Length: 260
Image (cartoon, rainbow, N blue to C red):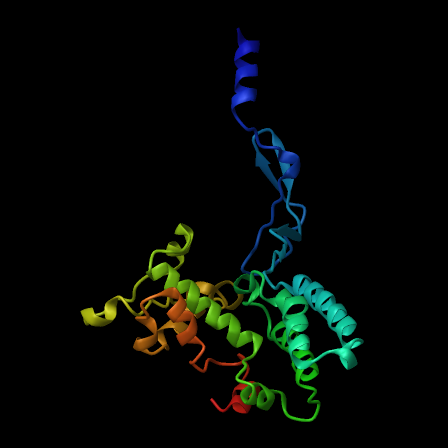
């Protein structure tokens, strides 16, 4: 009967729980989209200004302001706690604690929130500077100079390296399938270059165009030397990419300090 069929369906199939659904709508004009209604079956889902996916707070303007602000607060609290023990810590212990409990906050899903505002880039970099100065006990030398002397780079440059690593995995077929849809080979009359360079799409928007993985990542990849792109293994590529000097920031002032 129908009751037995319904019982069989419930026991053999998973039904979506609409109470756990979240919805967010992003507009190019950045107008407020909160409390709009989306119909899913017989239920209505209200859109929100912020939703949390896999621990990342997404807002309808894709600014990531709230998420990065929360990261900085958490990382700053951890750094302050570590600094209170600074007198009893060796340099190696400082490095271990700061990278595992402070800087690690900015490694999680960093490619997702990388395309935020310049204010956010500088805010995260300011905390990174505090950690680096604490580790090397240097509060006088210019920040970029400390990085050069210790063969380090900014968080911004490290995220660019991460993008290049993702592209390498896509080209080697060892990345998630959905990543393939974000990249395409650049058309070229030179067959020797066709498999190395990527197409940079033309856009007419900033937040929803230029500030995206599909635009920024191919530009960075195309700027790499061929010897890096043809690395035989992912491990070799990770080692080789660290030898390349990538932009330490997006702003002109920082680029002048870096010397590029």
